[in-house]
Length: 336
Image (cartoon, rainbow, N blue to C red; front, side, top):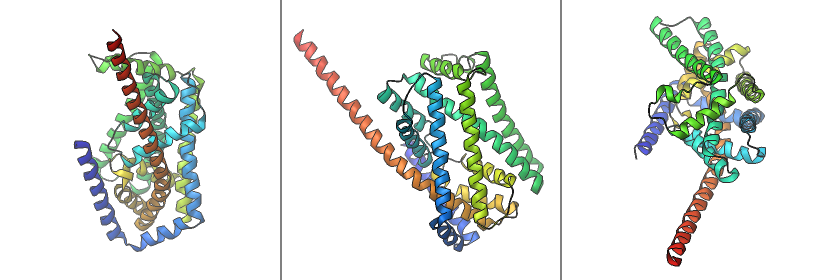
C-alpha cells in the first residue's frame, strides 16, 4: 500500500513540475516539440533510442555468456526491454526489474536465482561505471562554462560525486581481491546473497575478457546516448560541440535520481536550468526533453505490454505448478 501511495504521489509531483515549467516557459514550446517529433527528426531520435536499448540487451547477453548462460538475443531482449520498461514507468520499485529478469531466466532457462540476479547486478554496475564518466566530464564542462555557482552547492556536488566514485572503486577493488562485501557490512548474511556476490566477483576480474566486452558496450551505449543528445540539439537549431551535449546528458542522469515515472516534470525542470545556463534557451531544453520522452514512451509502452504478458504467463505457470504439487501430495497421502 505504501508503494502505491508513493507511486501516486510521485506521479502528481511530476505533473505539478511539468505544468509549472510549461507555464514559465510557454505552451508554444510543446507545439514545437510535437512538430519536431512528427517529422523525420523524430524518427531519427526514435531509431537511436531503440539502438540504445538494443546495445543494453547485447551487454546483458554478453554478461550471461560470461556467467556460462547461453540464450538467443531475441529471447533475452524481450526480457531486457520488459524490465527496462517497468523501471521506466515505476522507478519507485528499486529492484523490480532485476527481480523480473531473474525470474524469467529461472523459468525459461533454468538459470539459478543467484546467477540470474548477479547478471542483473553486473549490468547495473557496468552501466553506472560508464555513467559516472559521462557525469564527471559533463558536469566539469558545465561548471567551467558557467562558473562554480555557490561554494555550498559546489561542495555538495563534489562530495556526492566522490562518494559514488569511491563506492564503485571499492566494489571493483573488493572483487579483484575476492573479498566479500556482504560479510563486511552484514553480520547475519544470507547464503543466497553470498552466492550472488560470488558470481559478481567472479565476473569482475581484470583477466575476464567478457567484463571488458560488457564495459565496452556500456561506453558505446553512453556514446550513442550522447550523440542522440547532440543531434537533437542540432535539430533544434543550436550549434554546439560534444562537451555541452555531455553536460545535458549528465543532467539527464541527475533527473533520474528522483523516483518519478518517466521523470515527468523533473527532467523538464533540470534541463530548463541546464539549457538556460549553457545559453541554449530554457524553451529549447523543454522541447529537447519532450522529444526524447516521446521516443522513450513509445518504445517502453511496447516493452510494458511485453512485461504484462510475460508476467501473466509466469503467474499462470506458477499457479499451475502449485496445483499440480497439491494434487500429487494429495494422491500420495491417499495411497499411503
